[in-house]
Image 1 (cartoon, rainbow, N blue to C red):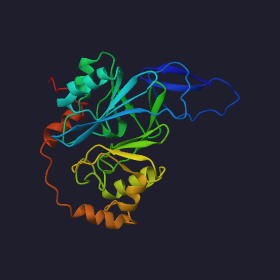
Image 2 (cartoon, helix red, strand yellow):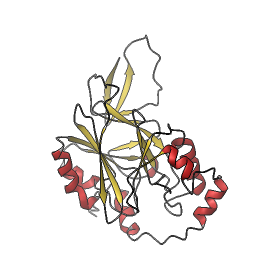
Image 3 (tube, helix red, strand yellow):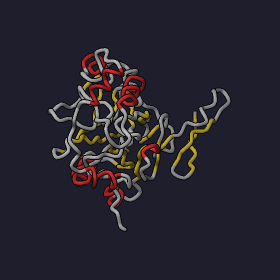
Amino acid sequence: MFRVCSRSSTLLLRQKTTLISPLPKNLKLFSTNMGGAVVHKDEKIGLKQLFDTESSTYTYLLWDQTTKDAILVDPVDILVDRDMKEVEDHGLKLVLGVNTHAHADHITGTGLLKQKIPGLKSVIAKASGAKADILVESGDKIVFGNRSLEVRSTPGHTTGCLSYVADDRSFVLTGDTLLIQGCGRTDFQGGSAETLYDSVHNELFTLPDDTIVYPAHDYKGRFSSSIRNEKENNPRLGAGKTKEEFAEIMKNLNLSYPKKIDVAVPANMRCGVPDVE
């Protein structure tokens, strides 16, 4: 139905026939696939959840089970070799290193991945102010093979936080915006409790109840949740909590200063590329 035309790193969908309505002018598709394909209704995106014990960070390896094109979301620099072994073991072609935001507790692995894998591109939110090969905004689609993630802007933890929704809405990668029975802090990097509340309620809690929630961190050995569970039971954001109640909770957390923030944030603003100056 469509052909895909390339303009630099951005691939724009263009209308091929007059029998359909034009696509929105601002829709962008970040893609590695230049051909047509059929995705069968029962075929799921391949997913492997990986964990960093030092920062309690979840990294997600996602792939098209037919084409074997893959992306890595929120890689950690000290675990790049582990991630590359997973790619090799699954027979995948890694094409994108994607971040949900500029993390404060670890350095992203995208810079090292770019050095080790020719042609790999880094991705982060345009609103983050960070450097990357591809800067995305809400409504964009990140495509790998014949599968895709919808980009949703979910600021509040930082100004540049994104969540990524699977093309079949079976799961959402929520970064630090929505954690299992919690959420990311809102007291640095342009954070705002009110903004985070709106992000969760407008962009995440509107997803189907059975959508699986995969966060960027967990500190209690949990792997995933669901939109229904978080809406009903999240002690900060669910169970009918008002925005005012949430803001009061966040104001009184009294969290310690992140140990790696002074090193991690500057590096992550370069998408993990070492400072050569």
